Image (spheres, rainbow, N blue to C red):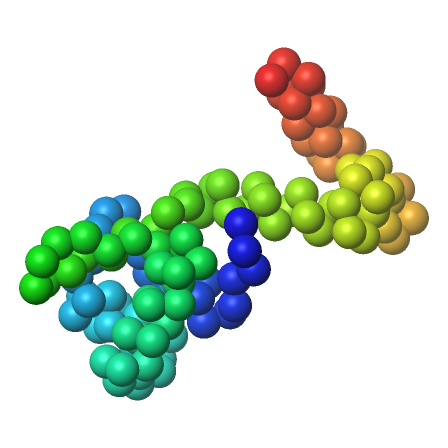
Length: 124
């Protein structure tokens, strides 16, 4: 997937939050309410055109277009997490975990949670 700007991600978050297609008006109202901004129609329209070109959203319908994301939030988070892991930790979860823990010892609850996660991943 192509890179997603912060504003594009905020638009996607509104679409993901709805869980279904949204009209332009619903999306503009939802975006402004969620972000506290006061975007005009032209600004959102420019972003949506660019996002369609990049394959992030799709539009359908006639005069009253509806928009929906082309990727789920879960797919997006999984992809950016993998890129982050590859870029900063050579793809190693163990190296990332060691860096995030700051060398501190794990308490029993955290180590148990980590073991459960590893067992679940092994089953997949």
